[in-house]
Image (cartoon, rainbow, N blue to C red):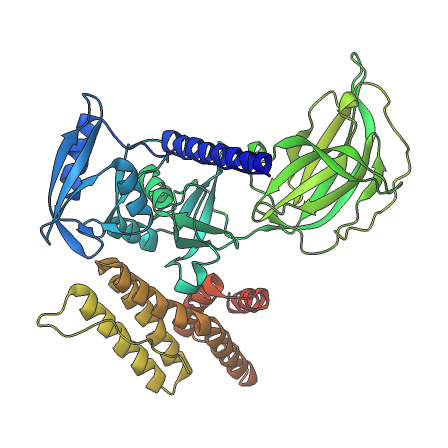
Length: 503
């Protein structure tokens, strides 16, 4: 028994020492507690007049532990004085316990550095609400890293309270705050540091340059065909064969946006059912969707199970994928963009590496409610309050309007006023309120526009008359709004049909 108790005592001591060691590791490898003298002085200036929890920060002083290790001391409005180490300041910025003045935010972009930035949220709102184009830069470790794609912006909004549970924090602990929705269906969920970087790089663009392409729709894969093997280089005995992928419209992407990769996966062999490591070549097709079955090929020269698959890790992206033996994959594939709505991927072989000439198709399964106003009358109205109240009056006037055409015009005018109100907002609550009201309108406006346009066209057809030019141009302007914010594909198809009729 004594031996058993002695073992238990040793175990407890061992566990205690292990816990202390782990805590020490966290302290050593966590966020730094101290910073440089220059950084501390700058940070103290920034934190003057900020708010810590519910208390105003009256003064901030710089203190040091050694010649190279500096931290802060804060005097709060309740008279208390606290030492602020850098790791605690970092934690408070992540949990919104430390707020700067002027709707600005203190951000530490990296969890191992005390370098900081000040993010002006109002400036970001101004840019996000007036920009038409977002320059999507592909992130680190993405096969498209270093490349960019200009995308049309559908709308910008703040994350709703119910969404915060689904989009909590990134790997550094920064909370997700904003949603940038693209016209092609992609979404960017942004933290404060991400929004700061977008603003600094100028990735939000207000106007389109004359020679700039903007992608507002995805390419839809329609079909693919095999191109037979033929001699490419007689001197070196190089042969080529290929796969031509057809889309719903001409492809204007550059060749650099179609990279390839060789991946190894442990999967079941489709023929034997046994699990084993298999190699695949994958050619990336960005801004692309596969919306229907596209038959592939069981074999094509030295490629097996050639198919179009959806990239489950990235938005609006597909692969041309095939099983391959990496030992005989000697030359990289080459991508050619044609003028017949297609992209050709050429593969090369130095010798005849055909497994079979037979190509067999393979199954590819793989009344508008107005939210309560945030405006409260306290003396002179702010610019936001004036514009927001004007938008509310316009919406109410539209609801009273019996003529559907005039109702739509008034609703569109209220959207413009809400946009101005958002740009004049000085707080998150004001921006959130105006954008929520905008989204309420945008949910019902496309269908209202479609129904009104159909009615106008049918009335003119029944009278065997042409629509007056001024009315036709107004309807086309309305349809532009519906096309941009139509929630469903069938709505967008109706809009395109009506646009063709009116044009």
